Amino acid sequence: MGRPGAALVEIKAGKPRIIALSHCVTNAQQPHGLRAEIIDAWAVSFVAAHAAKGFDAIVREDFVGRTSKQSHPVYSAWGSCDRALNKFGLAFTTPAISQSSVKKAVAGNGKSEKPELAEAVRRMTGYDGEFAVDDESDAAGVALAYAVQKGLIAND
Image 1 (tube, rainbow, N blue to C red):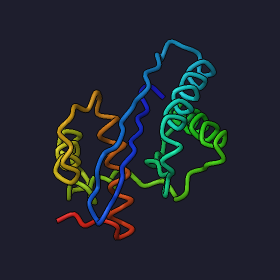
Image 2 (image 1 turned 45 degrees about the vertical axis):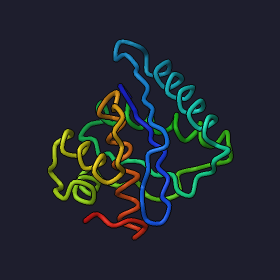
Image 3 (image 1 turned 120 degrees about the horizontal axis):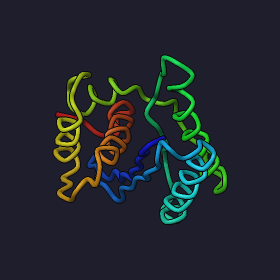
Image 4 (image 1 turned 90 degrees about the vertical axis):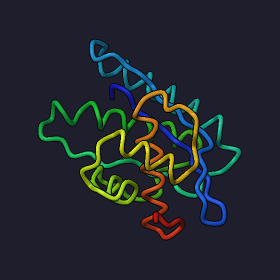
């Protein structure tokens, strides 16, 4: 809930390309309700900016918390994103992908660190811009992992 990220990745002829990246920052001192509304507004803005392009798949990274205190903020953020998508008649189209599956599909190692994942995202997409935060490269990694799993792209 502290800093969710989003990525729009286009795949043409088996080649992925990053179209857009974004993230939202909330403050742990803010009430959960306010943080959820901030995330909702950010997600609505991101989807609105790109809805005309269309979305073939909408996927998120999976999360398993050990405690309700740990899980609640993440699931609140998920709910915010669900509501934002629903405002456009959209929904997540596939089950969430685990962090280790994202890292393995994209970086080749399920225990890769964030810089390794970011570098793999760059290698796969040719992206040479800045990732404002690692949540943006993580979001792109989720999209790429989905594409690898579905056979839309190869990761050589």
